[in-house]
Amino acid sequence: KAGVTQTPRYLIKTRGQQVTLSCSPISGHRSVSWYQQTPGQGLQFLFEYFSETQRNKGNFPGRFSGRQFSNSRSEMNVSTLELGDSALYLCASSLHRGIETQYFGPGTRLLVL
Amino acid sequence: QQQVKQSPQSLIVQKGGISIINCAYENTAFDYFPWYQQFPGKGPALLIAIRPDVSEKKEGRFTISFNKSAKQFSLHIMDSQPGDSATYFCAARGGRETSGSRLTFGEGTQLTVNP
Image (tube, rainbow over all chains, first blue to last red; front, side, top):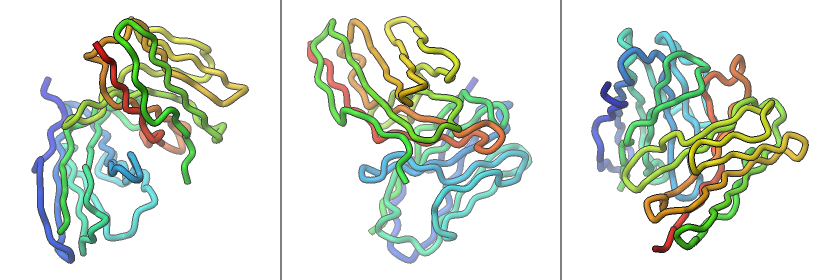
C-alpha cells in the first residue's frame, strides 16, 4: 500500500497570500489529521476530519481551515499568510476516527517571505 | 498550554549503550501514549505505544515504561545504534470519545548515537 502522500512538498509564498495543501491518506483510511511542526512550538494539532466533517480543532486562528472530500482526501488552507506560518505541515491518516495508529506523510514545507 | 513535557532536549549515546527519554503529563484523561521517531526530511513514524493499564511494553530493542501514579512514561532504547539517531517525540491522546485521533506531543529529543 502506498503511504500518506502530501503535495506539494515545498512551497514559497509571500505575506498576505493564501495557500492550499493537499493530503491523500492511505487507501481505506477515513480519518485525516493535520499538524504544524515548527522548531519553536514543536508539533501542534490543527484539525481532524472524518466522514467529510471536522471533528476536532486545535488552537489556531480562523485563517487556518480545511476540508475532506468523499474519497477521504483532505486539503488545508491558510489565508492571509504571516511570517510565523512558516512550518512543516504534516498530515496523518488512520483507519477510523479514534484508531490509535496514525501514519504520517512526509509533510509540506511552507516558507513565507 | 504544554501538557506533555519531554526531556532531555538532546542526548548523545555511544553505540551499544542505553538511550532513555522521559515524558511527564498532567491530564489524567490521557488514555494512549505513543512514541514517534522522525528522521530529517521525513514525517514522524510510530515506534511503540502503551495504554495506562500496562506498566511496561517491549518491542525489540524499544521499551516503554509507564508510571500512572507519577504520570510519567519513558522510552528505553537498548543497544543503541547509529541508525537510531533521530528525533523522538512522546505523545498522548485525551480519550477516544473526546479527542478522536488528536495527539498532544512533547517537545522532542534529538538523539545522536556515536559509532
